[in-house]
View 1: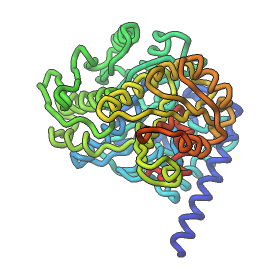
View 2 (view 1 turned 30 degrees about the vertical axis):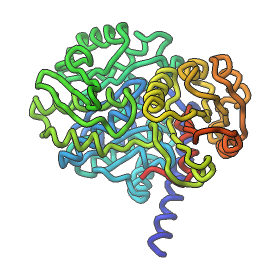
View 3 (view 1 turned 135 degrees about the horizontal axis):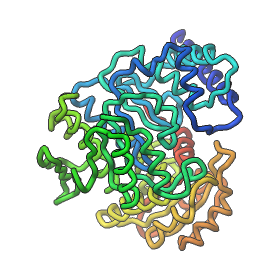
Length: 449
């Protein structure tokens, strides 16, 4: 009982500290490195004392690629720190210390140190919490640090790390154009800001103009070897197996635990990255570790099948309930392709429950599901003040050619679906926002661990 009370007290302390840090800057996003550099100097520059860093940027697939990297590295017996964002349910999901979620006590201590060092200076929430992550990573031993960019690359807080072991850029698409630019080449230049002189880099599948821009930026930065998907390595499915090939040779592997062609590509980026590091003698890597990583990888809210919980209990008998946090047109296309594959293997009527933020492109997202989804029920993202109005969102879905209606909540939407007469149990997908996914996992009682 006493231990439980201590944990609850530490949890409340963390929540209070995080809430107070929201008010340290008038803007949620203000890209730049000066404020964080100043804070890190006061903290003794912990970012210079991290275990070797793999730095990841891109629009889609950063988190999944990081999850594959972690699974494979841990299967190799290595200790891995991970920094990712945003979280789904608990802020601690952003920081893993040698494989474990940071404790409330350790997180509270790091946040207090950062807040005291910062004093009353301007700093964004992401910057000061990134400083806390660096403090924790520098204090705890590990073999590798997986560091995921928050937004962009060049001016992202994580880019204070000057000499990573490797840079990885996942597929780039239009997103956050108000901060990164209104064209793919401009966005690609910002993402390429993580390239460093003499540091090798892995690049995932890209549009031609994006790939060209990344190659130009890599040449300007004089990076180490640049390894590009489709040119220097490739990954594809053949006869129900995952085939990977690079200059080292060919691997015949089981399909990854995470579903969808896009996850095969994400797995390919992780394999390409680790094989490059292994060739250079930077890490040990066995084929068995790659195989184990593919089979044990876990990444919540990425086409995650829910098999129990409060919300699951509301679905019609025999129905499938899936959850995904993808929120832009490219993520919609990847998700629709994965569901089309599911439909080919196991036909079921597909119904969607979708909530999105106003900053996204709903029409482009919904267009991928035209002819695939029977209908969409739109819902609010209750935790976010800039969520799309469900009625307006339903209108945008119909403009994209998908029948739609609105509901007051995910629970109401599920109850609505339960009343529809049908011949076969449905496949239900809740999607459109990581924030909505977090709300669903919380309400369902299946928070990530």
